[in-house]
Amino acid sequence: MNHTLSSDGTKIAYERTGQGPALILVGGAFQRRGDFGDLPDLLSGHFEVITYDRRGRGDSGDTAPYDVQREIEDLDALIRLAGGTAFVHGMSSGAVLSLEAAARGSAISRLSVYEPPFVVDDTRPPVPEDYTDHLTALVAAGARSDAVAYFLTRGVGVPAEMVEGMRQAPFWAGMEALAHTLPYDARVMAGTMSGHPLPPGRWDSLAPHLLVLDGGASDPWIRNAAAALPGRHQTLPDQDHNVDPHALAPALTAFFTN
Figure 1 (tube, rainbow, N blue to C red):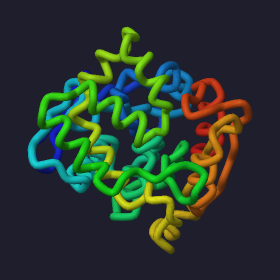
Figure 2: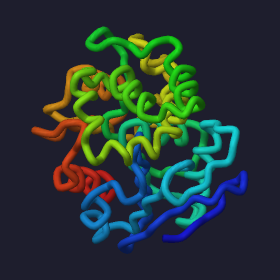
Figure 3: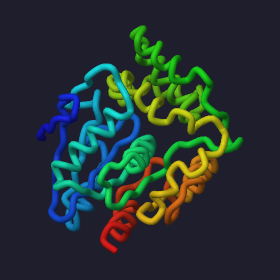
Figure 4: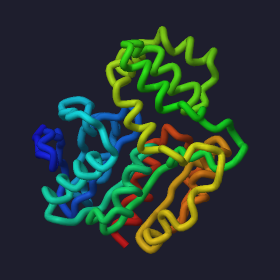
């Protein structure tokens, strides 16, 4: 594990594996640099794979106040570390962060995204209008478990009774430990989970170098979200939002090497 400095001086923890062109993996909510399973190893025969802790997570710093632009600068710091340009793959809300970074001028030569969690129609309820504010208030009050539950029910759409069962699971404590970053992801997603179509043209300029992936077993709302983006589209059969790295790695390798 190493650190690099973002533009505001925040330490960003990262790891590298493999050789070849740089490919940076950007995690979604609750993901840290070690939470990609076998994916880095599966890609390391073709790429120098960089995984990192987004700010506020793991071994990275968390300089206040939070702003999405600071997270883009974190990614830019890693791109500079990689030699000034890089491939990027984003997962879930990390996909949206990656899209926004590319649109704002980050030196991303090719970008792939897996299931950005937009809500673009009526196939699931939109998030409440005060979603980000409510998450922020729960975290500020120290109600970390309730913040996780609120994110899962209102942000992800997990049934409340299922979430209550999850509270007893061993992994819940790890989710609580990252609860303070959930408002960050909410701000990354701002305006894209309202049940309305995406803003026209927001990411159209990325289309020639963009691969949009979804899972054939995923819920309709998130597959519709993927379909709303420009670029090349690919569905991974039998996969859902918790995609198997062994299904994902071949698609990424083909896209970034051809």
